[in-house]
Amino acid sequence: MNDVLYDVWFSVVLFNRQDIFNCLIEKYGNAKQAFERFTDEDLLNLSDKQKDNMKRRELKQAEKIVLRCEKENVEIITQNSGIYPKLLKYTDMPPAVLYAKGNLDLLKAPKVTVIGSREHDKEGTENAIWFSRELMGAGIQVVAGFAEGIEANVNKTALSSIVILPCGINYTYPAKHFRLRNSIMQNGGLFLTEYPFGTNAYKENFLFRNRLLAGISDATVFIQCGAKSGTSHTFNWDALYGRDAFVIPGSIYNKYYQNSNRYIKEGGILVTSPSEVIAYFYAKYPYLVKKEMPSFPNEEQIFTIDNSLLENFSEDEKKIVKALSQKTLHIDDIVKEVNISIADLSVYLVNLELFGIVEKCEGNRYKIKR
Image (cartoon, rainbow, N blue to C red; front, top):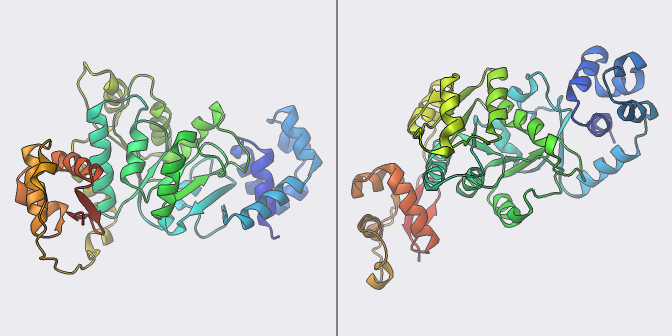
């Protein structure tokens, strides 16, 4: 074991007190030196229990965690690691370590956090699907929190998303999302947490997790946020870290937008289309615009669909199926062919996918399912 052991030890004993860890690093230079040299004076702001744990300098639990990470292919990312997210590193309270399982390459991309309330309506679902799909299609990495409601719709749409957990990497929270977790892993996603193995999703962890949702990304998109939404914590972290907060507005009579509209009044940027967020990222990262779309074979084979399968679908959905029966099309080309808004199209495509009529291909393209 190398010096990572000491970073892990601090992640265990300084539970939700990363501020103390960072003060020690600033004073002593690195985790090993801090472990060996800290004094009682450095521990004044800790609880008695944490002080006792620190003074024992017992490394056995940290050793077990490092060995388990090696066994279960969990990466331990320290602040000195080249893949530690730079934006997060320069916040006021970056984690001592990040435990990561999945595709680490996702950490290199420009990131946008997309979140919303557990309680939501159909419009919130549609916007979660629309924004997530368009942002990922534009080469911007989506980050979400894996909660029920809006965030679950984000994760289901952007399966190769980065998920930040409020618990140990071995837990799935909420537990009902275990199938979704498997799907994200199978589709090249990434799970991150600052909490070691065995840590439950305690209430206070969500507040600290929300600072990571804000800190890791260039900006946050707030899809639909009701009055009791925990997204208010993330909005506050955005303000503290100087991150841009893009907010979809809603009716003053719709309870699911009460916090959303407040965020706009308090400095959030009103957006009504993913293109506005994409334009922000393209201005900040010009290389995204120059990325070449992958080339695909020209599929001209015509596929026929049994009309009886389409009886319960809308006229626009039938038009989509007809367009795709001729060839595989990019989502922008379907918009032109069918002459409908991209918002409506995104909803129709999800519906057609659920019923096994069409399937999504690489590069935001669609075709009739064989």
